[in-house]
Amino acid sequence: MTEMWRVLFLSLVLVGCNWPGKDLQDYVLVPSNDAKPGFENELSQSEPGFGGYPERCDWLGFGRVVDGDTIVTYDENGQVRVRMIGIDTPESKREGTPVQDHALDASRELKNLIGNPLQVCLVQDTIGDQYDVYERRLSYVFTEDGLDLNAEMLRRGWARAYLRFPFDRKSEFAALERTAKDAKIGRWE
Image (cartoon, rainbow, N blue to C red; front, side, top):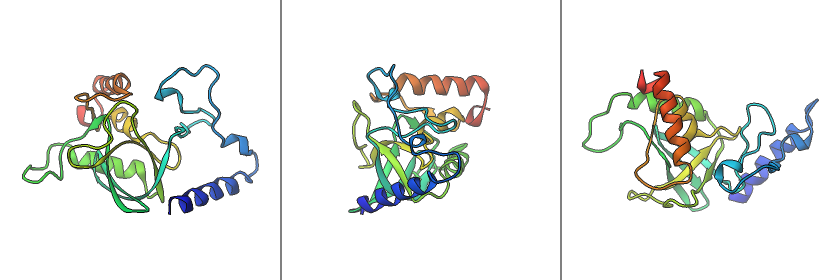
């Protein structure tokens, strides 16, 4: 099943390459010459507005948004619940807990950002856990067009950086939260 998604995606990319003014090389990720070790350098800036996909991207079928930091995806074995690593949004689905301020706003924002894709790119962290205590897969989530959803939720102020556990992008996410707070956007208004 995963192979089918990859073939479909590659086919769409190759068809898109036939558009006037586009070359196949416009879509191929090329490592930067000044790349340093670490996750943040795996992304190519090959096209304006396109962050690119990390090399270790795991494409899964998209199911739905659960709340502002959790989605449901599908692989060849069935449903996979995914918790977006490094971010936390107000609770809207925790049993016995009332819906918190801005929880519905955060969920709505994630739904708007993710759209209605066939698949999403999941990236495991290299130093953090792979699953949380609720057995959700911990991942960085990218849309089909290369948008880094974890970072974007922080950038737009609908998530806070969840710094309790180790993960590769801890300092980056803390800085994104600070910037959103300083700008008084999203939940920080």
